[in-house]
Image 1 (tube, helix red, strand yellow):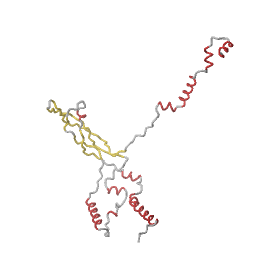
Image 2: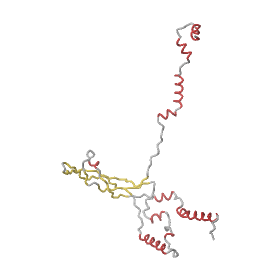
Image 3: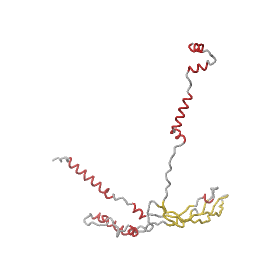
Image 4: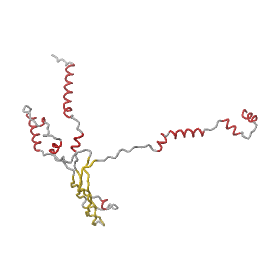
Length: 248
């Protein structure tokens, strides 16, 4: 017996089910918009840990996604063991700690321009040093970690030149900047500048300039041919004679 082709109702039902399956992960990814006051709470300097955040939000406990933590005994053994390994990894992982806005040691490269800007045939030693610089998070997109106090200290480096294939060492003092204190400060963005049209564009757009140009063109127009003939025979005083000359 030959199989009967599926009717249009079966294909439509399968399409509806397929669209519903595709919409499931999208529905889980959607969430409510974050209120603006939450950003203000996160921007406070008193929030340093998850417990501080919990107190700032005035909640008793942190809700977790139970679907990823609960084990279902009716699942396949392979999937069950995979979830157990995920839970073991979650239990072994340490809690993330906020990187506060403070001074930290960073590596700073001493360029040759800092030692001698007029010469390039030398080597700097050491090529890099450690300095104190401000870094860290501020819990808010409108503020950045910036230094409020800077100290300048001087260090000695070796300028190594080669003269007749022999090294020559010279001590050079180089200033370095260390950040002493840091603070989360607001980011001030300059307002957008108004772009004004140039002088050529202003002339194009100016109606007075256009009117003046048209009037100037009218002034430059040459007189008719008859008037030029009259100017040509200005020495003829008799109108009758002039008329005969023009008719001829």
